[in-house]
Length: 276
Length: 276
Image (cartoon, rainbow over all chains, first blue to last red; front, side):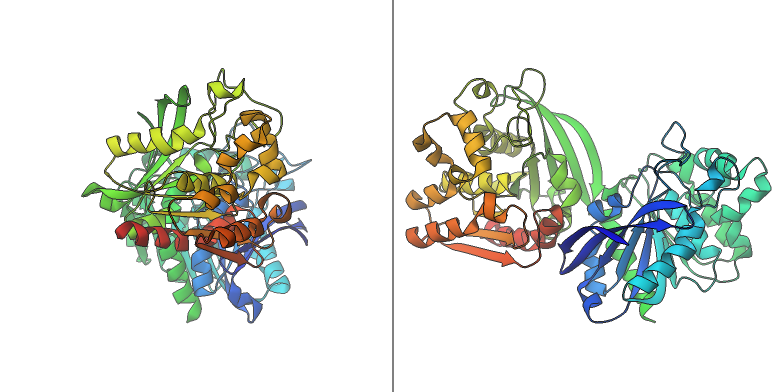
């Protein structure tokens, strides 16, 4: 792993590394925040999955999460949102291709060659982090928008793998909204049945673990009614009797100002679960 | 004033406005954070002056200051760092022209036409803020790097105008370092005596008010020995018996990770002074 950035932050270190990912078949950047406690012991890790157009930078520069991670003694890991670089397929528009991996493993050409973000974030990356950093093996996952979808799907598909999960303004039903339909058509092909394995509202129906879902959603979010539709998750969880804490936040939009305002509560939630 | 952005943040509103500045002779953007308390009463204002290359956006997206402003009930005001737009003189390089106003009033062509950042941030902007927002008239000023210079100079040149002043990694002696020499040569001309009116280390010699200077400086700052030289401020304050609290922070660099780590302490410092 090549260290690209190393910056003191709230008594710990905000680093960025670059390494060759087997899953993505190419070099990728990942941001790692090591709180002060990491100097003396192994710590739990919160994986953060970012939204459309983001890289590993957005969360670490805009969310203000390091303060809370330093308070609670959590490592923060923020990967990129897609493969990037020469030979990686891309498309016009911000919602497909580079910056828009949707945390699935693509099955269709030309995407299948590199777009294996699910394999990367749920398998390769945790193994790497636990080998290279003072990580205890206790994991939590959170994310925003496309990354909120990624966090919910990662947790629901992997019972026992995460101690807790949360999401900010997640795409809860990608099989039924334009962002998801566009991405899944490209990455997964025309068979809509195959899409269901990547849809949180579908996955709660058969989840083997009752891991509570913590979701914050701004009521002034510009994508609320078209792409996010939190009511679909509420209905799916009610029907499946899956525990959900969905908090609608009046006035808040889809931006990092919304995330910054509530990331402290999410990190406290994860820290409590990771302490147990 | 035209409102360009309006985003809920820590129970208040992070807004960005655009208006025609008389001092700058053109339209300029200014960021205003109104904490929740602003809905019911007048509040003190902390003016934040950003560093080279910044606009009104950097501080509001990266410093995480809104949380503390909401805790303490302070309005935050972050102007741009220079005039911008058609007809505004510029130069090659990041350290002169657009994004590099240095908070002086230029006397030399072609700069003098628009580069009147001192007049703007110390006179026009506070008058506007106090007319248009629930601002009590109690003021504090802080800033980073070039903006740390701006904050120190604004306070030292205006006894009674600010209740408190602080700076992150300020350019304390612009008349003696390359950034300052380049900017002052252009904006103020060749007479180095005239530069002294814009140099914190010179201004402490004759300051009529003993306003304590709070300065944080990272010891791993890449500009420490070439552009910042905090020892010059320490010497000048010792000689003039001007109160200075200079804190050297091991490991910290010049980035917003440094600012984010200590902005809470600075805002608490200003809030205490503004409460009195």
